[in-house]
Length: 119
Picture 1: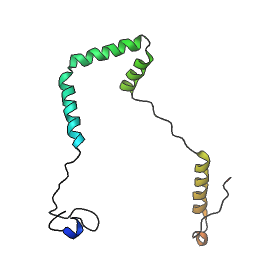
Picture 2 (picture 1 turned 60 degrees about the vertical axis):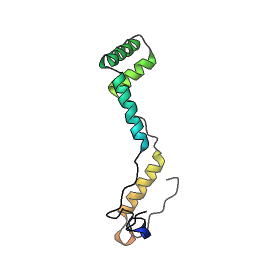
Picture 3 (picture 1 turned 120 degrees about the vertical axis):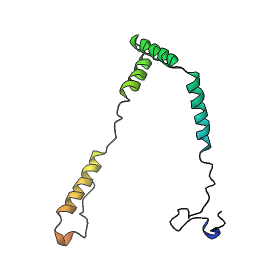
Picture 4 (picture 1 turned 180 degrees about the horizontal axis):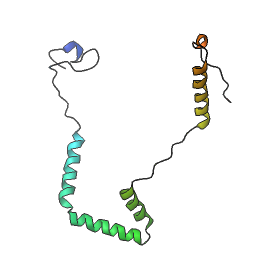
């Protein structure tokens, strides 16, 4: 709690910290660990090591290993776009309701159109 603003916990009415409020958050402690792991990995693996791994992956893919083919294509061309499940019937009903609202005469714009679920 801030000594300057004890009744508000150092925050303004909108939730933002007030000027002079000390930051006491250590942040995300896992980021430091992740940075250490990445540094250790980068220092343990040379460019020649990575080239050898990639060459091995390419050779496995050429010999027909489906997992190697998938990894190679995903890493070089990008993963395929995933399909989106769309409820077309609901979208058509929503679009029809919007069109009806737009087409209402000026004196009827204060009400929504009525339609059945099967439309």
